Image 1 (cartoon, rainbow, N blue to C red):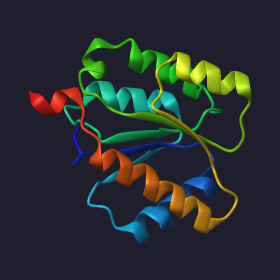
Image 2 (image 1 turned 120 degrees about the horizontal axis):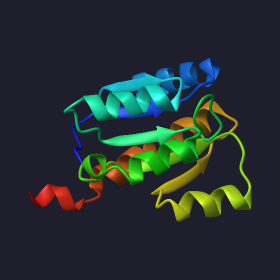
Image 3 (image 1 turned 180 degrees about the vertical axis):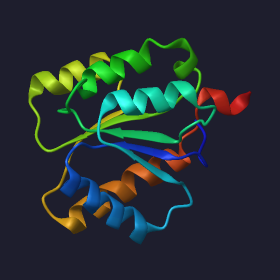
Length: 141
């Protein structure tokens, strides 16, 4: 995990993406925030770049490949596994099955987007600050 790397946000809803842009601007983290509207574009970026992202926040329901399919492709990619990128789902609504399926793919968190901007900001702050404190295996290399 590269704590100085970019935060990858995969969100196909432009309104939700705009809210996240405003919140990350307000929180002023040093990390670059890189936005994608679909999982294929994010996967292409992750596979082609030498950049080691800090964190992935992924919607579940997206066009082309959904969040579960994307997580599976990252989880089974040996090159991406060694980057130790925390992968979290960040979605509007969920079911018990979705949460169980997510944890079966070893996601590191599953969050339902709060309905208020203050709640959304608070959740983003908690997520980022938690992972800033966390230690990953690749930090010993």
